[in-house]
Amino acid sequence: MVECSDGSLYTGFTVDIARRVLQHNESKLGAKSVKGKLPVKLVYSENFLTKSEALKREHEIKGWSRVKKQKLIKLATVNKLSDNKTLLKPKEAPALRNAVTKRG
Image (cartoon, rainbow, N blue to C red; front, top):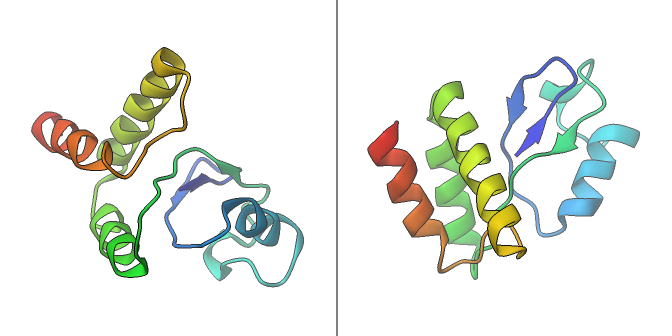
């Protein structure tokens, strides 16, 4: 998930996060919905073993309210700071999803 310069959030799927953020910011290959809202910065990511799992999760998050997405970002940031690990590992994603669902 990236945050645009206007504060809006964009959720998408990619196999290469760094390349995709660069595309959004510096090429014509970025999403049309972020054009005019540049630069974007990465604020949240998850890793999945299959494309199918990733796309299902993308669809789920896209259906969430902005407030719920912000809670997810905040929880992941706290998790990263406290564990000094990557934002989320595939096994941790369901636990975080449950925490956000129960709170939001």
